[in-house]
Length: 51
Image 1 (tube, rainbow, N blue to C red):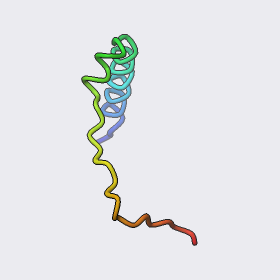
Image 2: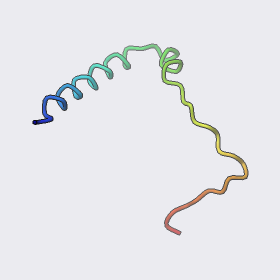
Image 3: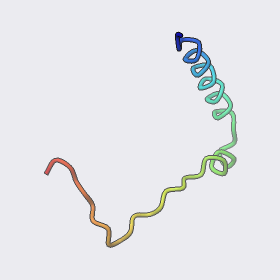
């Protein structure tokens, strides 16, 4: 079974979502796609790779 049809559908869905997203008002975008990240705790150490 080929997954090419599924990839084509996913590609079209991404394109449609992009068109709708670009047409939304900035305030509405902020409400719909609000960031849910937690702020970093002040006592949490920062791990830096490569040192």
